[in-house]
Amino acid sequence: MKAFLARLLTLPRGQKRWLMVGADLLLLPGALWAAYVLRFAEVLPDPALQVWWLFPATALLGILIFSRLGLYRTVVRFMGMRAIWLVAAGVALLAAPLLEEIVFRGLVHNALARVLGPHRRWGIILLSAVIFTLIHLGAVLPYALGSLFMLAIVLGWLYERTGSLWPPIVVHFLFNALNTIMAWQVDLEMPVPS
Image (cartoon, rainbow, N blue to C red; front, side, top):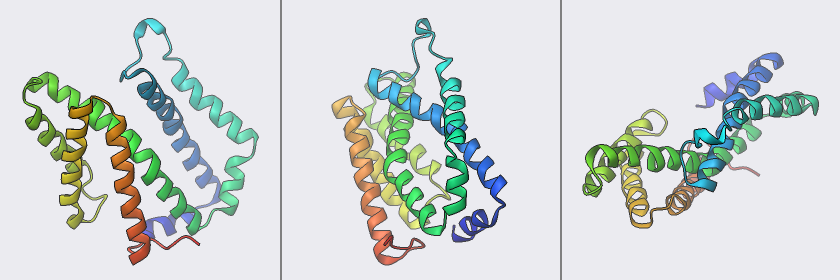
């Protein structure tokens, strides 16, 4: 991971800017979608609302504003390894729990419930936990997969019990926060921010 981040830092400024623009093309509509899901408790907007144009418009307008304000130029000029770690920690703490819970509990869990039937709650919870764990292969160290599987079972149970995405999001956030703090304390490829 350090080698990958070090390589990113050595890219020419123009390539770094295009990487950020590409990320914003995906993340800005993703943030709008997440807000929609949390506000209306629906995974997909109602076609009758005719709001699909907002997703590409959000990305284009956001990129135009960021460019006009000089955000890309400023970030590239002053970004160092510490900033990259802080952004990675922010994503792990905030974006990952929100988006992963929308996908795994909101989409995968509900799709499995439709296929398997709602009376097979533990089968749905276990199968979605296996999928959640397998998606993280390569992103986490192998010895962490067991704790991820257990976390996914707890998150699925919370979702089944409450019918809301908020309890799994909060627990997922706390799990990531605890792991980030422990990683900083034992220096597992992550420097302590000062």
